[in-house]
Image (cartoon, rainbow, N blue to C red; front, side, top):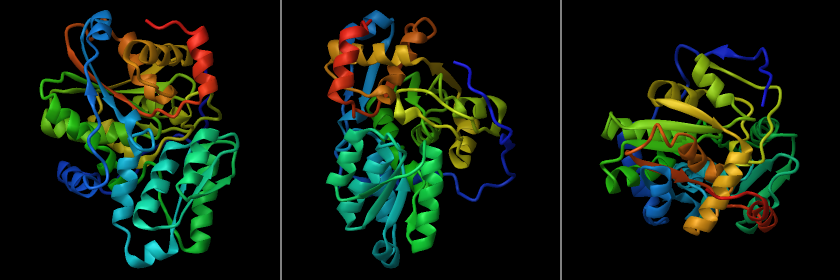
Length: 340
């Protein structure tokens, strides 16, 4: 799918306003998160691995309380608010999973949370945010527009705006997922991680390269929303005029500075997958593994299938995040998209 790139592609500034998290920050985040979240399973579906031709392991972040790894980052970030910031509350923008993480963390720490979502946001995720006590405001035609509105709203009210990507504490938090993988599977050759804003991929790369520099880290983005892929390839921040994918967790139109900086330095490759490939991966996870994943959650497996000849004989860990797929879309996929 052709996506037009705007003239807003710019070179990365010489110095970022944010510090890049280190492995020590990830260990610190794990100490914060441990009282609230148990480690997620790392499944080894032998039959599916045999079909693909490599030793497959699935990191089941779709089993988190909010159905995605983002909750790790939300807890770590909100844990560091001072008393005044907690009183004034937090504001975020999200297509769903980041917003759920902020709502969950807000409820955990007693902080009022407001989440801006684009018009047409996943109703299941919106309902989950509201159920956890967040105020949800629909504003903007996509995530980038909702983000602009949320940042302005936070500034007007003196609240803390929490970006879904440009947050070192958030990245350190979500990176604890990869820390669990590296400790459970020290022989891993390749990590495959989906990319929306890039917090999960950048966190995974920081941990993997610090613990075992030879591990290959591969990101996965939707063909119809390749802003992070294009930024990585061109080594400049890229914005698109439009994007088109059913996988709202990957629906990024504008690349973020902090995660892009980390991805450029640490990630070995980024691949693009089609919506059709993600739908087939969803069907495969349900019928062959018994896992429900949304488009973003199944993107890693779609890439693993696409790269199966290149990965032959390796030990491969794939992040499955998130799991917030509505029953109507799931039924549609199972009726029309054949598993592998």
